Length: 550
Image (cartoon, rainbow, N blue to C red; front, side):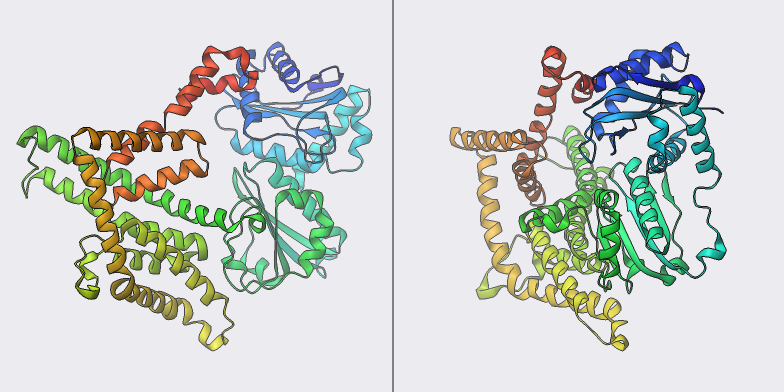
């Protein structure tokens, strides 16, 4: 199927903004019977652009969309009289546009392939001579030739010439998994070839991994370059020289990246690197690890909460407001399943906080120690203290960090190869788990449990009191939590409120979480109403979001 035709080339167009470009593309697509609805094409192009800019560098941009309004997959090339703002990497204005229009279903892989082809084409230094031409036939013939060459075999190499070259491997991955992933790969490949290496770069885009690295590739590689804006598991590269960078650095500083990668240190542990990790503060890391644990804990909260709510709600309607389902009743079993889910969520929280810090090695110790900390019947009563409350959420957070950094420290130690094999099998899962479990039982558990018991009793008394004082305090607490939730949706203040309410769920105090749940939809609902009622006060590209907010 031909997606690039002579009448899809539009040169020297007088367009002055993104919105004018999208209007032009939609009008041409409708006129050429590529699309059945012009307005829908504009909305879909604007929506894609709102996710992350499709601008690249050197005056190029690749606006693209998959839309239900598209009837035939098509590729346009548009050159502009003057460049327009498009949030390009190198701050250049977009002047040369490749636009991809694909039907909604069945073309996701095709879109990624086209984007990667275009990303590689624009790196060709000869392409500028073609694109500045005023002759549409000349532009079409040369672009078509480039596409055919790329489609035949992008990675064709003379095997005789590369036999004696040293191999360098890498991985590229960007947030959206489309253009930047493949542009970074192309830049690294070219830079490595110019430096006398034979490159093999695995791309992890939205269509899945391509050019996948084999065990032999890793074994024979001189060094490894991880160019990623996402977290990459580096277990397979332990023992190799590994250099980490972002896709932006790979695109702009590929030659410098090669120089630095040649001097990279040997990877000694599974180092889970994420975007701009070097610049993150300790406070940011602390919150990030907690949120990682909570994201894995949420399914336990949802399932356990639904089971308990259904059991109590239906049970009270059958057996009376002050009664619960008797033992052996189906509703009683639902209640018990919900309780088990709530107990397990504490272990999951601690396990995945540790996992966020040190990788898979922290999962088992984090889960075990957090579960022990949530079992108050195991605590040794220091000074005759009677402990009625487990450490719960506080224990999971505390021991998630202690276990995570303990495992990370042990993995950083230089140990003889003869002993290195027992570290992940015995020392870490047994030693770390036992040490911190005993700390929780005999030293930390009782005092913290006692403090939490007094705190929880105070909170329960507030919500149980029906007098004006209790209701007033509950109202003020709800006002405070609701304000924190809506103050900066997704920001640090919002997260503090959510974490506080989540911690109390584990102690069977559900009112604060109810307050938080009621507050969460308010800000998005308000934004949705605002964009719906006062449309003219907002940029046009935000309009498609209004009903999603509502």
